[in-house]
Amino acid sequence: MARSEDPGADICSDARRLLTPAEAAARVLATLVPIAGVETVPLGQARGRILRGAIAAPRSLPPFDHSAVDGYALAFRSAPDEDASYRLVGRVAAGRPLSGEVRPGDAVRIFTGAAVPFGCDAVVMQEHADVVDGVVMPRRSYRAGDNIRLAGEDVPAGADLLPGGTVIDPRHLALLAASGLSRVSVGRRLRVAVLSTGTELRAPGETLSEGAIYDSNRVMLLALFDHPAIETIDAGIVPDDAAGIAAAIRDAAARADLVITSGGVSVGEEDLVRGSVEAAGGFLTPLKIGMKPGKPLAFGRIGHAAILGLPGNPLAALVGAMIIGRQVLAVLAGMPAPVLRTLPATAGFERRVTPGRIEFAPACVTGRERDGTLVVETLGRGGSARLMPLTAADGFCIIPADIEQVSPGDRLSFLPMDRLGLYGSV
Ligand SMILES: Nc1nc2c(c(=O)[nH]1)N[C@H]1C(S)=C(S)[C@@H](COP(=O)(O)OP(=O)(O)OC[C@H]3O[C@@H](n4cnc5c(N)ncnc54)[C@H](O)[C@@H]3O)O[C@H]1N2
Ligand code: MOO
Image 1 (cartoon, protein in one colour):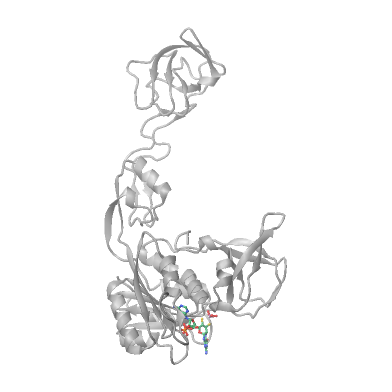
Image 2 (cartoon, protein in one colour; image 1 turned 90 degrees about the horizontal axis):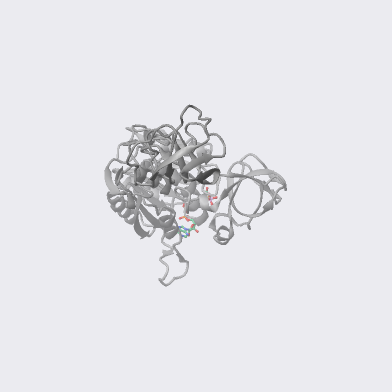
């Protein structure tokens, strides 16, 4: 993976002030380029994969002029034809073209999707015509082109079918298939290793000794980034031991394009991740971000791999992953950096807040204003170590960094939980 010569220089934060989340993301993303490597996959395995180059349309869509309705194709005598009767001379169904010629004044029985015979100008819906003794009489006049879908009106041959960076979803698959493409060239999957640091951590199922807790971040982060374009690697739990963390990070970096750690990025002497990355030959730059939770993050590189250090508190790890992490993954994987697709909302609660950090507070939708705007209420207090408010929430209420008080009726933003994941779904 190629990056700028000295990525550390780009992301060094000014220790005296907190970065806004956008500034932090911009500094981190400026150091990254998408991973190299493409592979060709059949359409059935292409959902969620990322196009690396634009695809040109190999043929026009639709490939020929066809009828939009079941009815009668009319060959005008003049344009527009005022004579209201046509002689029925044949029949054409989808996939079964007409044999024989059509002359002015003729009509052909036609069905939706059938090729419009050469010489026919318009199609009348069968409900809008009388047919008596082989004569078709439309009940109103028609203009050339009525009820005909022209070749190439959806996509002309050679046009850009899909741009590079497209994350292929079912709509794109339909377009590729309609164009006759059975395989598509996509970026190789991004390898992302996730490891938890902390002597207190145990895997669920293990016995808890005094002072120990279960590791909840790793399974959450692995699931958050589970995506067809990502190969997640579970790199386990590493105790707070500098040599052990260095070895684990070195090992993870050898297997991954991106290593994501949680824990140990704050300021205490037990926060060993930065020193361990340096001991392993890499660098890790602390980023103090004006967001709550998720203030202490770190970003750097070890060998060919990028490394993102998330805070240990579960909600802080999730918010850091959501705001910075998923952008890092998207850029490395070659997809456009995702934007936070928030909704306007009004506060249904009152709360004093400490200015300085934009807050992502778990919240529920409790109603709607008359104009349809969502009314939201935050859930509980107690900050970044709590999981219950998070699991009960419909999403995050976003409280700006520059206010001291939220009052009922204040305009805020709301990020629905189902928009959390790498691309839309969690
Ligand atoms: N003196 C200061 N102390 C702290 C500051 C600060 O600015 N000055 N910042 C606080 C903030 S904000 C956060 S967030 C945390 C971040 O701490 P670390 O990233 O160093 O994380 P740890 O200390 O290792 O752990 C914090 C907390 O989370 C628990 N944890 C860790 N890993 C997991 C996991 N995988 N699953 C579940 N829980 C986990 C850990 O046991 C701790 O309780 O620092 C504050 N301190
Ligand atoms: O950033 Mo810490 O995340 O406030 O808990």
